[in-house]
Image (cartoon, rainbow, N blue to C red; front, top):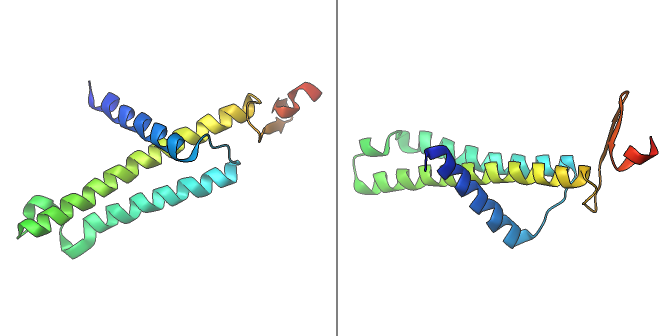
Length: 124
């Protein structure tokens, strides 16, 4: 399995974990953006912690094994949050697709001068 396939498998596993924890989620676009932004914020915090804490950038350039282990833990938290960000992005698209297909309790309609898609399609 190549690296990309392995990472996408991790994202799929995270989506399954999220579904077990919360069930199918159907939020509005603004709710999804809030959820997504919160996840991105967690990834950012962990990435910044890894980069700037104690001035240590490379965990293998540390002076003690404890410092190295702390830095490895920080970068692995960052990686885990990145997988969660990707999984939330997938959940956002899944939810939107359900809404556009009328399979959600929160159907969405998108209209422009070219017509509508979603809930109001039939009324056009």
